[in-house]
Every structure is written in C-alpha cells, then in structure tokens.
Length: 583
Image 1 (cartoon, helix red, strand yellow):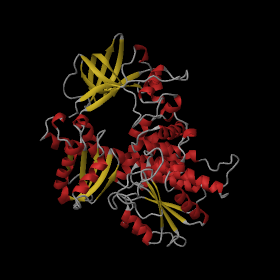
Image 2: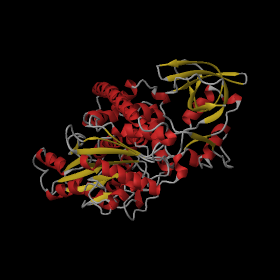
Image 3: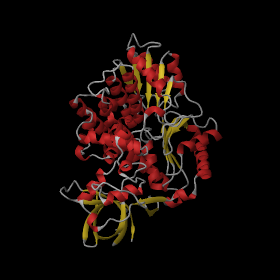
Image 4: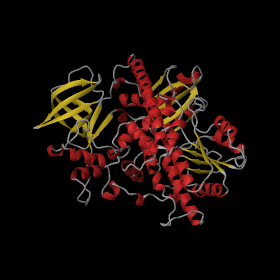
C-alpha cells in the first residue's frame, strides 16, 4: 500500500548574484529552498550562531569548570540512539580535550532500563562508582540527548548528593527537572535563535562555551593560536548525530554537518566512524548526508535497538583502528539481524492492516498497531514504514519486556501534525492513561499499560480527528521541475551530491518528467529496473520496492533523483524513481 501522492513543483525565487562556480542548476535549487545567496546556501563555521543566548550555559560551564579544576568524577550518561551515542562520544572526548581527567560514561539498556535517566539506572551507577572522589558531592552527572523529562532519575541522583547537568534538545513538559543546570534550546525563556539543534549539537555548544570560560580564566593551554584545543575535530561525530536524528537542517545545522562531512571525506574522522564507512562499503571521498542516514547511522542504531548501545559508544570512543574495525563488524552483523526483524514486523503490520483497509485512501486518520511478539527496539522503524506507506500518523507498540504488562510505543507523524503535542493532549484529557511520553513534532515515544492499549488507541484517534486538517492527508511530492537534456550528466549528479548537505528542511533535489519505458525487469524480487527514453536520450532508472506485479505502462510520469551510478562506474548515471504514474 502506498499513499496517493500529488506532484507539485517548487518555485525558485529570483536570487543572486552567485559565484561563477555555482552551476545554474544548483542556483535554481538553492533559491527554491529560500537560500538567496551563497552564504545562505553553503553556510560556514565562521557564521555559527553564538552560544551566548543558550539559557543555562553559564551555570553549566561553571559546574564543568569546577569539576575539572577539582579533579572530580564527571559521569556522562548517553541515550540508546545515534544522536545519544554521538553526543556521549563528543562529551567524553571534548571534556578530556579540555583537561578533565576523570570522565566516564554510561548508557541505559533499552530492555532493562527503558528511556533516559531512570532511578534504576542511577542505582546501578551508584553501585559501580569508582571509589574515592566520586561519592556524595564528588560526582557531576551530565545527561546528553535526554534529561529534560527525567524528573525521577534526576531526583534520585540528587538524593545521592551528586550534581546534575542536563543537556538536551527535546521539548520539556509542564515543569523542569530538579537539575543544577539545564541547557536545552527548547526550554521556556531560551533565546537561542535555532530550536532544532540535535542533542549532539547542544553538547558541542556546551564545549565551545566551556573552552571559552577556561581560556578566559587562564586555566587552559591555548597553544600557539591562542584558542585552545581544536574542537572542530569533534564535528565528524556532530554531523553523524545531527543527520541521524532527522532534525531540520537549518543554516546552523548545515554548517555543522558540512564541516563534519569534510572531515570524513578527508579521512579525518574518528576510527569508529571510518570503520563504519568501510563496513558499509561507502567511498569516504564521496560521502554524503544520505550515506550517513542510510548506511552509517543504522549500523550504530542497531546496537541500541537489539542489544546495548554501549557497544556503539565504544566504537566511537576507541582510538585503535583494529579495535574499531572489529566493533564495526559486530555492529554490521547486528544491523543485518535488525533488518530481518524489521522486515518481518513490517510485513505482519501490513498484513494485519490489509484485513480491514483496502488501500491507503481508505485508511483511518491514525494508525495504532501492537503485537505481543514484536521487539521494542524496532517499533520506531515499523511506525515510520507505516507512516510513509499510508501517510497517516502511526504508533507501533511492543512489550517493554517479554511477557510484561508494560508497552513501549514509538510514534511517527506526517508534515503539519505535531505528534508530541498530540500525546500531550491525550494525556491531559485522560490523566493516568499514559505512563510517560516525550519527543518532537515528527517523532515521539511513550509507555503505557497493556490494559490501556485499546483506550489509548481510541483517545489518540479522537485527538487526531479533532486536530488533523483534511488538507494534510494527501501526500505531496515536491519536485524541482524538469531537467534539460544537457543536465543528464555525471557532472550534474556530482554537483547535486556535493551541493548539500541535504536533509530535513533542506530537502535533497528531485525532479519530474515524462519518459518512454523502453524496457524493464524485476531485480531482487521487489525492485524495478527500467530503461527510459527522453527524446534521443536513453537513461537507466531503478525504483526500489517498485514491483507491484503489474507491467509498467509504455509511457510514465516519474519523480526522481539524479545520481551517479557507481556500480557501472565512469560517467554512468541513473534515475532513482520515488514516484511513478501513467503519463
């Protein structure tokens, strides 16, 4: 089942002047995304937003500076997704670069602790504390990519006499947790201009401010340049976490991601990321944000989904290339297992849904799915697949642990519908129905009792019916128009790849047009390989998942991406079909 889509072309506004090295094709694409000049299209690190307007930064850097000066234990607690893992690695590496000698890290296990800093995790960490200098008043706990909703866990840490610094980017609830300092651009009163930093981006900003504080206090070896340790060495990790978390790539995030990609393309990434690029069989010199999203991040995420993200963080923290390769091989194996589990769960979800829904157009306004045999680490991917295929908000649930009565759900939304706010509305209308929830506009997580599943599904659908406008229910395919005959070249494909980074809020270019189907065949059982005619031009194309059992018509209208065909090499190109209909 795929949603019925409508094709709409973006309108490129008048812009410029552009440097001569920017081809007209890219000029048109940039202006259609609101970038009117090269400074907006390709922002530089020199133009990063200042940390000064981030609320809580002074208190946060004071806590860290004092802990470093007193040689106290700093415990970084990450999260079990790619953003949380890279944020943890950035924190540990960055704090050591800035003089911290006693830095350790931990991460919750999805199956044992659930999301975030919980009292159970705090109790485990307290039992493992490494001796003198780490007892009451001696430990500074730093959360990365979570914490803003972890009231009970932070209270438990405070009860031990620990100090707590929260660094997060998620939306807060009605009250803030009892931390000593909170840095989160989405907390009330924060004046930081960009609200879309990933968790790893927030931690990077904290390190920038900490370096300045230590430098101004004369407590840092500033070196010959007078700046101190080069924190841009961490931008490979910042790029991976930012792309993986699907936050909008505004100008600030694009500057961070572009700088990180430059390091990775130059072979300057940390050993763990270089090993993951190898095992994913990507060419580092041509690495793109898409490669991060579809090849690197899934292998890191797989550890947190099926096993323990501690393995992923270990990969990012090691400086031994041989060890990194060994861990990357293990992560690759886990990811293969994850794909198999995801495929099975998605097929089960589609089969169950097909019994009551004939096609995407007749689907209900919202989808809630549950299976007692599903794995809680993969429900987010199932929800995402169902959301894409039905163009409806979707939530998938699985038991938090085998045979248990607590369910963990992962929610995904469509553009224009704020899923976290929807959960807040359900919670306000039905107190006690949801145990806990949190997230963003497009993705959220929640926990509830199995006995509450039916009541929650009804309440959620009622909320969606009351707030989701009819105009949002039709999937829209945005195109950058037609390509001219002389633009179907490897040079154009390379310019499009290197013109990013592309991602959420700054979408990858795609085009549309009518083509003659000269030949076709099925590959890999599910995919459609096409040879298309466009005037005198013959073009190779592939539509992943495009085989429906029906022969394609003789003439088609498609939306597509233009990419280099590295499999055939040389100047070969191919069209990657994202939408196809009879012309």
